[in-house]
Length: 401
Image 1 (cartoon, rainbow, N blue to C red):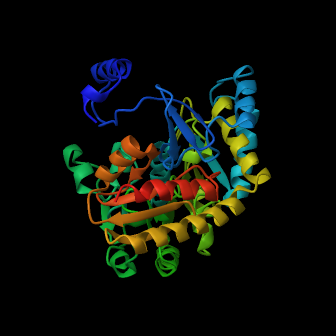
Image 2 (cartoon, rainbow, N blue to C red; image 1 turned 60 degrees about the horizontal axis):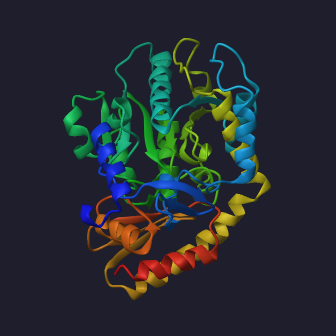
């Protein structure tokens, strides 16, 4: 859609945005105004079926009345007090998150990227405590994505993202995801951790195989290394379990979570257990906003509503239905090369750039989709979608190819 087809008010608003925003995004020519359930509405009142959920964030969907009421009450009570003091919402959210994960300690952050930074510091600090020296190495995965800060970017296995910002953290080596031998080949006396997504998201929706994840766990145990699992996108119920690693019979030493934890309110966390839970000492890490009463009450509410509304059971059912419908779609269209995923994090790999299909879906079918890698469309809708919403999406998808 070119500028000549835009409504004047929208074009003026987009022109203003391009004037004021630092240019690090190529945005689509839509201005979203509000949402309800699994639908978004733009500034001109058009309705869009949302299968992107703000990049896997809006697990409970938009404008949930109970969630909104809880946040309004906290807004009128206390927004911030700093981590120099305790606050009840952080205690409540922390207890719920530890119960859901089986981990032992939690640190609340402002984002997933910050959670990754904290996880990397735990690994470095643990190895320093163990050996009495620095200079340790971390094994990450090719085609991974862990964030845009320099530390998170250092363990993101994509040269395109890294090259302009080199040199990054030293001592990072990259193995092939789902290739245990490639990990073994990189382990040495300086290795302190292996970091990976349980389901690679930006890299194309690749779940870890059971053999690979269990094998990496065994390697870490044998070498006194930490296993860090990034559940920022695939966690919080999206796979059908609260955290995707819970389906594999393994436990990480450190895990990260964000996105759907706040249902739109910016919050993340890193969690640790066992030897990793006592690695860092007072003064080793901190944050001004992380864990404040408002964001933690949002997370506490999300975790409570997940349990009360049986969200995990719902995801298992709708995820199976989505899988079956996407399998039908793939079988009917030669342009689909592969179908991968679990629960409500699934991807279709096409024989053409995914960006073209995403743009066409948005502007012609009022369907919000997002890509993952060059040729993959990922389906990460609000976790509250129904089979009817899946049917609507498939009908729209059929018009694109």
